[in-house]
Length: 258
Image (cartoon, rainbow, N blue to C red; front, side, top):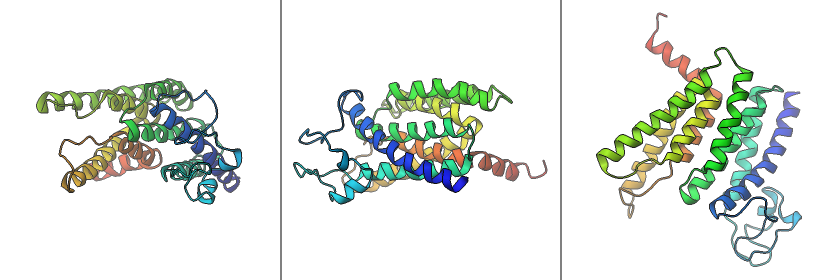
């Protein structure tokens, strides 16, 4: 059943990935996801159904609009392919179980908010807060021993990032992290539980490495804003699979005699 389940998840991942692309663009451009079908962002012509096949259409059209020839960013097929791969990995990891539901929702939300953050450096409340509200009862229902792990992890992660943002602003007199990142940490904790700890660590490491690299590159100001959401999302998705193992591995090194 698992190979078939993975195959189905990959197909659905391509479809959902296409939807997430459209939603991210509309959120970034203040356009309702419920208004009209997908259209070219350059000429506004409605995209034909046969030109809206995930990944394949972009390759056939060679990354250009059929009507006006405007380039279609490579992020669109990349987002579709990434969603498909992650859906397949989640299906292989969870098997045919109820865990698939919150985990697929979580992966979709992380991809969506990352795309919006890359475009306008905002984590949309309209996505992240409802996702947390839906995820909390689901996670408690699936694993209620102890039930309080999920809300405590969410609130704890949010308070941790808020404290860092507060101290940074007081010391540097500039905003280093927005409240959107704090809300994103809340959502991460709700879905990951204790695994949010290594997820935040990985997010900070990834953000620091890229940030230092940008500051060292020519023409990049030390105060240039770097969206933190994608790094948090990468750490969160990674720890969906290996977060508990990382905690156990660390405790094994720190407490070898336990």
